[in-house]
Image 1: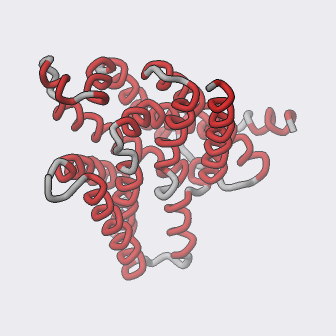
Image 2 (image 1 turned 45 degrees about the horizontal axis):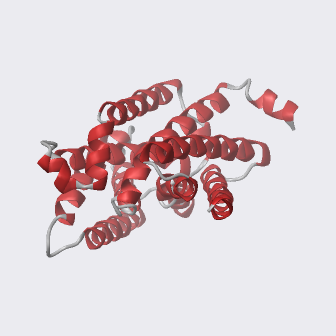
Length: 277
């Protein structure tokens, strides 16, 4: 099996898949800790449904580069979710439910009415649960993903202290001169970028697993924000690599395999956390 893996690694598309998978897993885990602690975990799920709706529109209108539409629509939706979630009449979880369900329904409806594909169910299933598109990436797509991923990591590192303050106590952050609302907006935009990048990897329905599982796993063992973040990133990358390798060797769906690896990682961390305590 090792010889088989070494043989596959000689192909550029396998190396591209591993690079993109590692970068997306890293970005997802960094912001995942903040979202879990702020009890806004399902924003990833909501935005992934929005991205599905935008991708459906891009597909039926014949836009060759889906990201030209999906990225701005998802970013705008992230801002709207943040603003609506602060409304006393519409709480954050209700806002996410409204936007995500509506986008998912309209996206599927549009694909049914206007799609010219002979395999509509296959297209929808691939978009929702991931497909082999991660194994057909071009060097240009890998470069774009690399640039955006490095930008996300740079934002997190540069604003780490402010993100930390906003995560735990927005009132204290405002009192110390940190514009909490501004950094909440930054977090929402960065998450939107991650969601769009992750759609080809795990599909729109499984994206939230990349955000939530590594963070929850790390929290079972570690207590400090820094330790949780670092372990979450390491675990997420390891699960992504393991999932992609197993998928290539066994022929299983990439997205589902990665999420299964994340789930196994959580179970192991849950057991270790119970023993340590």
